[in-house]
Image 1 (tube, helix red, strand yellow):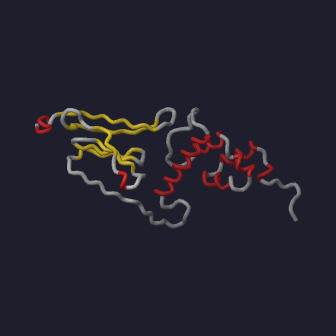
Image 2: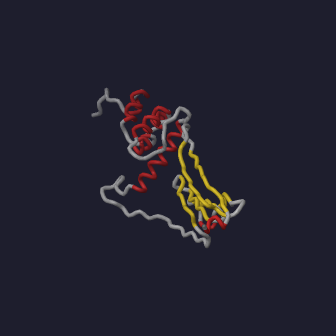
Image 3: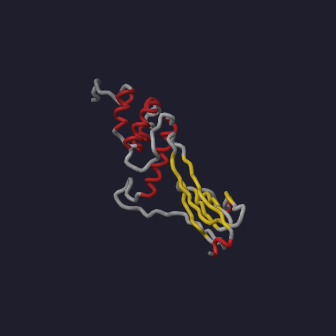
Length: 186
């Protein structure tokens, strides 16, 4: 016989639910959403995702920042968690599972200076006569986008760095220098 004084999750106040959400993982928060409309709405508060952001035990972008909305925090956490799942063989199972990864081949006849992977999605490749950017999420037929061509001679040096600004927006910075072919022979 059910206990008439027992409470279900649907009867708990939001403040109590938010304390519970503070102590559970992101997949569990997403599962709670499926239980009822009330619990779904209870997970749509910035406070829930800001706390989850601070306590998550996997790599994620810096944050939470005041300028990030609940949707921004939720999206960043879910994306980071999915990446974590792909690269951590032990998440969710007792046995390691074999992961399959797509591979792509890039061919070019010129001299390669350097290649950098930016945000796990863009491959920036520097050659003597141009810098190309490949979006690895697109199919191979889409090709590369040329993002720079030296105006006087050839590329002498190249460096690409990526970071997250104080408001949580990603950006990349490329530094380079040009020279003439005679300078490169010295």
